[in-house]
Length: 249
Image 1 (spheres, rainbow, N blue to C red):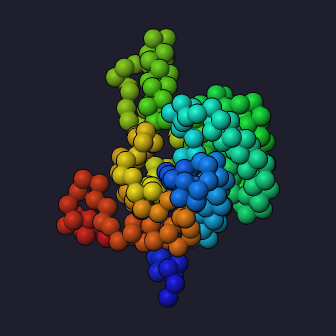
Image 2: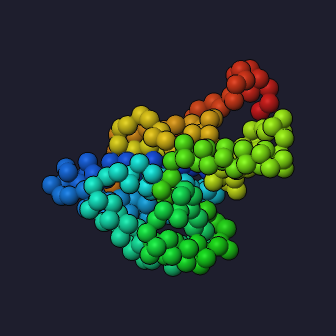
């Protein structure tokens, strides 16, 4: 039995989030510069998107570029933006053919104009697809997202269109970038780091975390399947006891 056949198709996480980490270290191991690792990382993205479609995941959010990444050396940032434009341009037709809808979250207006325009075109091309929604987190950080949401809510309170007593978890969630998506049930991080690096802080409150030592360019379909199997072998209690969960099942 191969790894994919071990997956329980009745318990597939609807939404999986991924922190793609280790491109730079992988490139260093190959004696190459960091951007070479980012190029190779695109192959992993392509393969994981295919795997997500094959097993029936409905939402896949990948942390492509954080607000903190703008602080990297200018030559690396410039190369990353060029790679992003080229990748979106190349991959959009195939995403469309495979029924994948491309969306993005983050401070998108901070992206270079060419990158922003290419992204908008790709999202327009794929907007009617329903097999999988692929969400790129670009120029994104959870603290930026939550701060922006709080400002929007505060402005409504100031204008008198919202009462402070009516602020709830659901209201806050409706002001986040991810308001149109369910919260992730599974978060995967590669490269052996055990942190979430300012990624979906609100949305990951009850997600299962899966950490692997594999660097992102080495992460492939079987690794993705193993993460899903790991998720399926866990008991999700949401604050309840095991006995309560057993009675509900």
